Structures are given as C-alpha cells and as structure tokens.
Image (cartoon, rainbow, N blue to C red; front, side):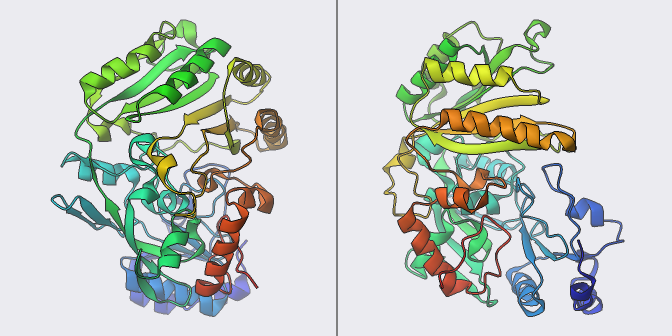
Length: 460
C-alpha cells in the first residue's frame, strides 16, 4: 500500500510543472488504467506514475527514486506475470510514450525505443520485408522480452531476441546514460542480454533485421493423444531450422473457428512458423497435418507480421504457472500430461511445449546472460482460474505436474518465472553466470535500486 510518509517526500507540484499531465497520482482519472497490467489479480497502488518521453526524463525519475528511497517499477508493455511493472506505494516509470523507431533498410538494423510493443515493431519493419524475432504475443513490450532473452517464432532460424541485439542505451542507477555494445561497457552489454531489468533502464535498442518477406504459418488444431503429442514433438525436433513451433495441449473451450463437437476435447493448438519460402514450408508442415485429421487448419502463406493476431483488450488472465526445460517428450510423458490435465478444476489448464535448438543452440552458453543454449524443449504449465480462493489449489496442481515432468535439465527461463522464490531465480542462471551477474550488478547498481524484478542482488 501507499506509504504516506514516503509519498509526502515526492515533489508532486514540481513534477507536474515538469511532466505536466504525464504525472498520474491517486485520484486522477487515468490512475486506475495506468496502474493496470496485462495479467489479472494484480491490484497495486503506486504513489505516482510518470510517463517519460526521453532518456533525460528517465534519468530524472531514476534519480528521484534513488534520492527518496522509494521503490521503482519500470513499465514497458505491462506484461510482467508477477506485476513487477507496477509498484505498491512506489514510483512507476512508464516508458509507453517512448516510441521512436529508426529503420535502416539497407543496413538491416533498427534503433527503437521501449514504448513500442513487439507487434508494433514487427509490423513497422515488416513493411520492408524485415523482422527481428520476439515472442508469441504482439502486445508485449519490447523492453522486458528483450532483457530476459526472447524466445519466439524465429528462435530456431534466427535465435533469441538478444542474439540480434547489437547495442543499447541504458540509464544506470546513478542516473548516467550509457551507450553499450560489445566494445563499450561489454560486461553490462553481456548482462542485459538475459539478466532482465536488474542493471538499468534501457531507453533504446539497436536490433539486427533479417529478411523475412513471407512465411508459411498459423494455427493448427489436432486431437491431443499420447501418440499425437509425441509425434508432433518428434517432427518439430527433426524439422528444418526454418520451422519453429509452439504446441499448447489443453481441453478446448468454445471457439468460433472450432466445430462444436470438439469443445471440451483434449487438443493440440499448435502455432507453426516456417521462416522461408512458403512453397517449401508447405512441404515441411504437411507431416504435422498428417499426424491426425486436424480439427482446424489455419496454416497458410502470410506476411510474418500477420502471425500476431489481434488480442482482446479486456483479457486479463489470472493463472498459476511454472516454466521449465525438459530433455524429451515421448509417449509416456505425453500421457502423463494428459492425465494431469484431466484432473484440473481450473477454467483452463494446459501445457505449452516449445522445441528449441537451431540458431539459438549455436551461440556459446557464456556469450550472453541467457545460458540455456543446449536446452531441448521449454515447457510452460498454466492453470487459469477466476476465484482468488482457488489459488492454492491450482498452484498445487501446477507444482505436481512440474515435479512429474522434471528431467535432467533443471534450468528455467527468467521471462516466464512467477512468484517462484530465489531458488527458481537461481535456476535461470548457472552458478558461473550468476556470480558474474552479481558482480556486474555491484558495479552498476550497488544499492539494488532496480530490485522490482526477478532480482539478482549485488555481490557484497
């Protein structure tokens, strides 16, 4: 809740003189919408929300947080699953107005500010037949997904988002604006590629652009059985690197494009993206369609930006979740997933399977703070629910399935972590990586000003 003593330290009148209507406080008409997040169940009340327009203003807000000692939240797209993008009683630094995008078509690079979403950026560069890989959700802010790694539709063909990050401008805890790349502040540049928001506020990113004029892609609905799930994963693992897939296994709710007789049935809702010649892509995706008669087939030639479908503005899911990596999904593991889903009382319960490898795996593990380069399959378990009193039940369900799925790979992807505690944050980074991150944290943020995140504390 809002700490009135700390709030009284804020020079609100001076802030309004400087930032005008971009300073939002309790009681303002925009306050509730400005503090809302993509995920539901998060009800935090910051003392002030400041929407900044440039790096100088970012530095001023960072200095304000440092001088007052108030908790600082950094908001790009508002997609933090645990609400790290909004403080309860502190300061929210809102980057949503920082939307500049400079595209160098000939040089195949782009400088972009963090107020843009992945979908907005992708559509803008897509006008030139170019792309940088982000995640599978268009409304996510590019700041958070980039700093955590970025696993999406181009992961096997072009790697993680951070594999295309060439440089960045970052405001550090002392209010300095640093330009960082492989030659300038190389340790910090290494750390922000997977270390999350622990080290500063990124005010601009320079990305590499790839030629992706067209794809073969879209949704494919298949019946979910132990055999179909295992077959799908096997095909995804052996497919050319141009193909990246995401297989969501769950009980189908009513969907307008899914025949009614399939509602309530176990399904694989797969997203397929072949980042190459669509004619070749048609041959590559054909075996997936032949696994079983599809319930629905929306895979077709399209422009890459069209893979990001419109989202419901009022959709704010509440979920218990867990992210992990596994070595394999065979028929017995697939059956275990189905059996477990059948026991859930959630509004919707499912397991997402992302086959990795390809370009992502060819980057040396120590080249970036994201170190899980050899992980085979990412698994995300989720149980969506409506009643707050059901939280413990669904969290127990998720934990039980995760424990049953655990194999030799004990890592985790930091961008998908929930309220999992320090042990799970440590799982996102091997020991050597963690120690290096903690040392860099001590250099650039010794007082842990940037702590509202999956936190890496500075080494003492």
